[in-house]
Image 1 (cartoon, rainbow, N blue to C red):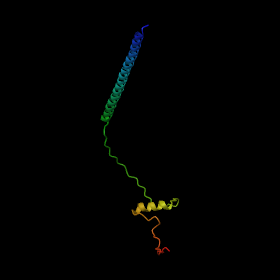
Image 2: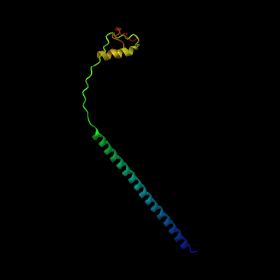
Image 3: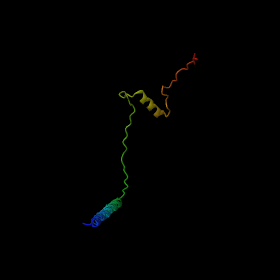
Image 4: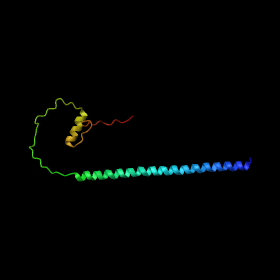
Length: 121
């Protein structure tokens, strides 16, 4: 066989394979674009349906103003005993700060006495 004919046949086969590859890529890309467009359309339709359903549900609401007339029940404790309540010192300090609005010093209300300065030798 003629080597030029074999070379031409090989080149033709390579060109046909490359053409088929690029054609398939183009078809595949178009298929993906079409699939994504379908998904986008479904999302858009679902969103519109949800908005219309919510709007219909809100429109169906009927506000109702009702006056409640009932006697108020009060219970007042005058002698509260906390003998079973065990709170650590830090909790008591925080409660006192919250009640008085003033922070209490960490060491208590009394400050330590002044110490004379001792010179270093």
